[in-house]
Amino acid sequence: MDLSKTVARVGAICRRFRIGSLTPQLSACEEHLGGGGVVDVAVLGQFKAGKSSFLNALIGAPIVPVDVLPSTAVVTRIGYGQRERVTVHGLAGEPFEIPLARLAEFVTERGNPGNEKRVAVVDAELPALAPYEGVRFVDTPGLGSVFAHNTKVSRDWMPRVGAALVAVSVNHPLSEDDLLLLNDVSLHTPEAALLLTKADLVTGEELASVIEFTRRQATSRTGKEWKVLPVSNRPGFEGMREEVAEYLRERIAGRREEAFGEIARHKVHALVAGCREYLNLAERAAEAADTARSDLVAALARERRGFGSVKGELRLLCNHLQAEVRTAADERFHAYHGEVTGRVTANLREAMTGWEGHLGQVTRKFEGWLADAMMEEMGAVSLCGEGHLAGFLFRAQASVERSVRAFADRLAREIERALGIRFEGARFDPRVEEPAHPDVRLSPTFDTYFELLWFLIPMSVFRPLVRRHLLRRIPWEVEKNLSRVAGQWADAVGASIDGLYRDATAFLEREVGTIGGLVGEADAGNRLEETRVALAELAALESAVS
Image 1 (tube, rainbow, N blue to C red):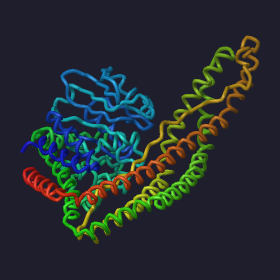
Image 2: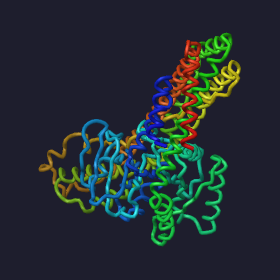
Image 3: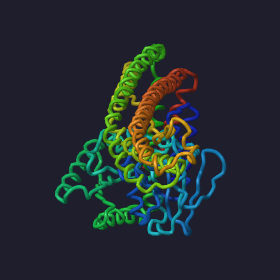
């Protein structure tokens, strides 16, 4: 069976019946089938789960940047090539090559904050990956994180997963977000395993318990058996890394054509099934009595009119959570003031002992040193933001999903009441964003431009006074930058909550519009026959794919 033709036929049916909800799945199937048989092995998981570090260990060299800040800002694909080559694909313009040494400038949050360089994806080819020819490893920007940076790119990319390794740190049990990610992965690929990172943090006996617990949780939630692969990047754990490498070589690279076909059939089968569900609805609506169909159309109209109250409730909830986030961020980040001030002050005392020169030179050294120190400290403090504020996004996500689910359930009940069928419809995937790196800014070292008069100030006399002045700057600089980090996290979480609101309302309107179109046109002269022909075609396609 030519799967490309199957996808083309399903696409034609979706366009004919205006089923826009399946567009991401259509695009993913087309891209996978047009990939020349290359299997994309995505390394997915929560922010700082060790994805990039694992890839470096697999490659055998520090190729993928690792940072205290979120390391991956865009999707990075790494595969075998006869020569070392890195190609940057922008959201606009022609692709261009860069040296491997410049990779971090385009794929990391520090080098490309907020993806300001408008990069779609970066492809790296390395001779060292010869054992995995035909496989492309994909480093993702925290697809499973509470905060998914550049969410549109990462979420839209999810259907393109070929095979997957879902990274979970051994010291963080599977979270609700991890379990949702496992369900997403199961939908898009049959070839997936759990990567249990940082396995060196527990004893052998403890590791066995964690593996079994993780496997049970994953199986219970998804209904499928998961292979759990423990791994550590530290010396002495080479055996674990080799086990993962062997799994990848034997299960995917060694049977690449077979794996590619299995993954392609899985994706196409899911696409056909999704299209069939919408057409089943259209068929039943066309077969139904005029009164039943009219009742359903009226119910859809009522739901449309009820959008105002639903939006109002969601907006009120989001505003309340945003206010709570701002207060909590300010309190929780400023709790670090004493600790950070003490550490920076001690480090400054030590650094100043080697500073020589006139006042202007000392001032420049201080400002450069302080900028680096604040970036490091604020970067470390910012890493705690997810833990401090994730609860607010969980609450927002849960509340928004409940509202969407309640709305969808009402539609399903109306459809079942009128047509006698159960209808699931499209799935709502809330999208959230990750904040950019801390915006560290420093006040002038002196309130006036004394450093410009350095030739009038003998440092042999005033050096102790200058050093005391520099030390007195530290508490204020720490206070100011903690306020900035708190404000950035509050703004980012607030924007994420706004994004949840927008996504939810857009989803509801789109779903009602799609259902309304299918039902409203059901009484057209030849619509029933056209729908049945399409369903018969889908049944034949599904049988051929299976």
